[in-house]
Image (tube, rainbow, N blue to C red; front, side, top):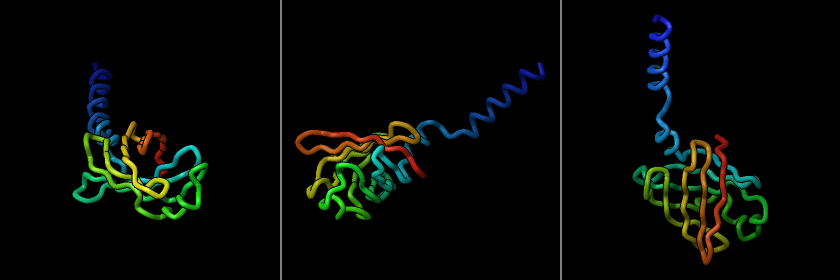
Length: 127
């Protein structure tokens, strides 16, 4: 009986100590890296529901002279459309494109850019 009480109390304590999935999944703040080494810093901005993204470094096929001009610049500005989802603009290849940023897990984010076609890249949280 004592063990059951202890386990029940431990489960309740763990539930209060652990953040809810929605809370951790809805926090985009941090540095994110794709499989090629390109990194962004995302943060909430504006009224606290908008998302701003700064390109820290660009690697892989996207590392062109044109795109290198965007390093250390804010290139993403988006409005929250649902919990963990933002839609707006991204500077891409010398022009602006539609951007969709989705937190797909506490440490994964998907960035989709659309000009004529849409392309998505997954990023992992680095910090």
